[in-house]
Image (cartoon, rainbow, N blue to C red; front, side, top):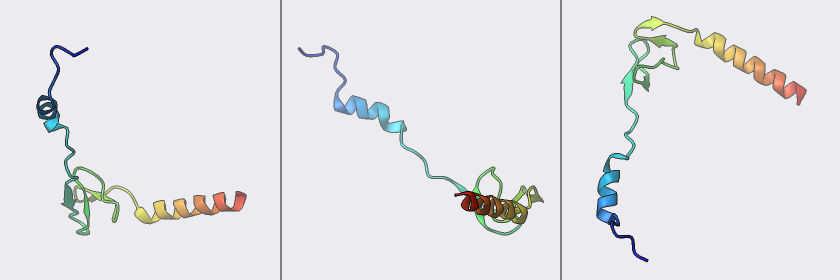
Length: 74
């Protein structure tokens, strides 16, 4: 049995022409010059829009401590 109003390949592909993903746009950090996602915190220095938001060294130390504790229990 044939579908009466079948969408052809070209019609289907025209409809899907807007489904492509865009590449992530990167911005340059004002503080350290590293690339980061637009409107997001810089993961290298912890600043956003030119001001310090988080202390990256403290976060890295806490992560290392948590990893060491997990390794000790395992």
